[in-house]
Length: 553
Image (cartoon, rainbow, N blue to C red; front, top):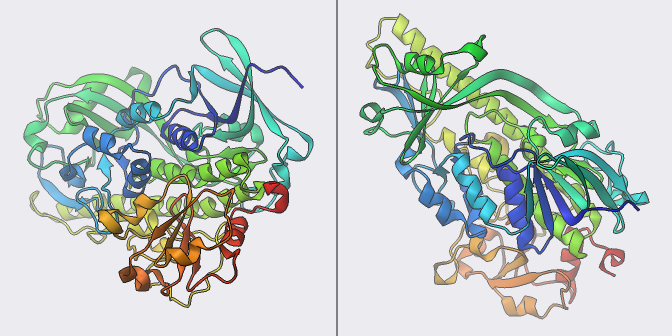
């Protein structure tokens, strides 16, 4: 066996928000991680601009939500505005529901904040080893039955036999500071290295979807725009001349526009001044310029043996609607408890197959929604052009081609439902409420059906049900004594929480029933009434963790 320079349970490739979130989640589970990032530091560019409600729920569980909110914009910035130029009045506006104000469906509120403000807090949230300026240049799976082909199944997994207890991955990492190659052995690799993922390309994993849509440029600049925007704050101002976004509460702006043909010789300050509008007369001081490609695809496979794709490496989502980074955060929240279970021995390796089974359909739905968002934004601009060509006054407003709640997208953000081996069938006759189809995107109707995110409901002492979940399984039941008499449930981490009787109808439970909640907050099983036999809970935990006597021995 080759000599190695470092070892880890999980090697994380990529130090963006998804990789950093995975590092924090895995550390909570006691999993040793090593994160490598090819760049020498965290990105100085603002990039993603929105942390949505579901991501804030995840960060609340990590104890990070208050800090993120403190560094973010005030809630009134949770709005988009459409203007002919930045110094004109709005001809349309829409709220980002769940960001501009609290919603009853969650105990937290999303925020408008720049990615470069989010990442330092994520970096500080864990102590796991991290190496900047370290690029993965080689990758090989070792260990007989642990080697996967990457060709099994439409869900993108290689089967549970591809991840036995004895295998590993040997990675070669180039340290750009020293010029030395370092060999790292890990039980698993989590690739969160972006839309141009070198890991995905090394594995030969293809993608489906439109692919590269267009080339864009982000210009970070300073200018005094307060007289046009202070009384009508927004997280995004859409104009026909590009998108303007305030970067930080204390100042700074970004301009997003298609990359010009002669970008290498562009006068960026002049271009931003022209985009602000004729005769704006505002001095523009350009700080940074970044060129990037808007991609739209989903990887054909999310798993290749012991290597798993996450974030933009697995799914690149267009920026309109702020869904990309948040989809990646929810994805690693789904994955990390499963990795921990396999590594700690209370889950079978087949549980990792459910990552792709559950998250790949979500990625496809999210991509469709983002494409729809983009088309609707273009529709707004076309309507405005037609209005002005028809002789309308510049102050005249137009009706948006979506409902006021459209950009909430809570049906997609909170209404995600999973069907996999990690979700057990329902013995309750409770109907699934109408409007819970995640494809609807906009409307969210809470339901405690198996596979769904457990709804936000009040518990004792003003706690939310969502505060009962963490690095353990949670049994919510109106009759804890009935379920505490079950046989021992070791080795699974489990907590039993009393559920107030007033929630029985909403949860589809009888007076002795129970909901078994997975560590990611999704309902793993629902039992309408008292357990059937003394080992019912143990059997349920074994089933939804794909555990067998072999794995538990």
